[in-house]
Length: 206
Image (cartoon, rainbow, N blue to C red):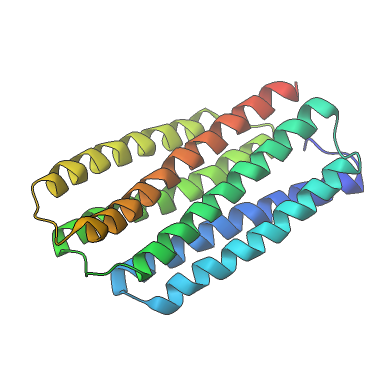
């Protein structure tokens, strides 16, 4: 364990709850686009609000003096990036619900693949933080995050090439679909950023 006081234990509990909220949001988003399930997509938005409250609680505990400054600043940045993941998932959910046309099955298949890998990456992020907490080797968990992010990069590249060959009904239809794809592709980048901060935390706690 890398905490000592009750305040520090509370920060770690909140961070783990924050990460679990990301996992739930990734699960709900995947179900939402697989089944065109508006209730699941709305749940993503609810989870984003829960994440906001958790980020504020984490910040409050850190400002009260939990952890040494070097660890404190990195934990705060970590909670910010985790919250950005939730913000982006909310953007994805709203943009999907607002799509003016149904996605072609081929395009939807690419998007579901990205959502599935995002979900796996959220699990990897939890494992990486747990390894940090236990002072265990981070190598496997962080390597999985980077490897999965590379997979998503390839899927995004293939999806973009596929979309460039398709006719678009109009500028705004194309833009809204594009905004959704960009938001969806950004989730894995943010999860990778969070994984990088875990590695920084590992160094700052030595």
